[in-house]
Length: 361
Image (tube, rainbow, N blue to C red; front, side, top):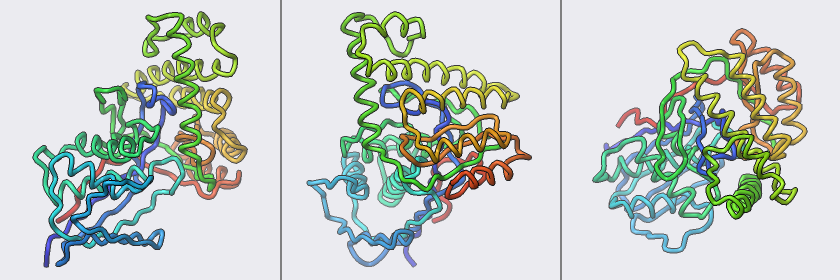
């Protein structure tokens, strides 16, 4: 019969800290119950035969293929390169089918869920000298998706999907995280149906944010973004070119909002009104300072709030993608309908999910 492996990796929602992780600042995110499903069974050949029915595609990889030249966006090849570097020996063929119900190119990390499931499969199928811990899977997925391709993203996506639940993640070099809960009631996901421009938006905002911080450090060598306050913003904004001021403000204020949200989300009884208000504050900065929204996203946000949501925000890099609304549970259906009526491709309730899991062998 051969060996079978079934892995599920969830989508993720960034609740607080969009456009912060590549600055080494913390984020708050959660995995949600939309999944990539990877099913694999050994075959008699020295090939990895990958079927992707959702996009009507397939891929055949010889187990001996080293991929010394990596094509941009070839996640399967990048994953193989990274696990080999960590001592994994690919020596058996598998028939693999990968499918799922995560919206693609929508800001909820379908690509990272694919990468996490692929890394998880490779480590489980071919063994690793290290323990198969969520953090290890997440780190290797980050290396494969971001570092191998020299992409501008951070660690939020891979770590949230690998670990699962609601997490606070320090995105600096240590990647320390804190699990702050397994539930957040009343979330509604709204899909705009407009693909986001991840690399273009990320590169532009990351570049401007880093330029702003470099400017400040030239005049104040002791400046520390992690400890910066709005007083620091007022002190230093005059030394910046006008075009960089919004990026500097966003970096500081979004960090302050994330820290406040952490305090609220760690409480035994959650104040949904306050958490929703913090989401709104965060969204206003993403909209007005970083300018990552588009008219349809703005209409969806307004519709959610007008229908009774505590708060709502765009998710991810921007230029399209999804929103998340935090709603009273009894209003989730009404708010979903309002978001759809505002032009969304779809809107529906989502729940916090566990991280990447093996379901059977």
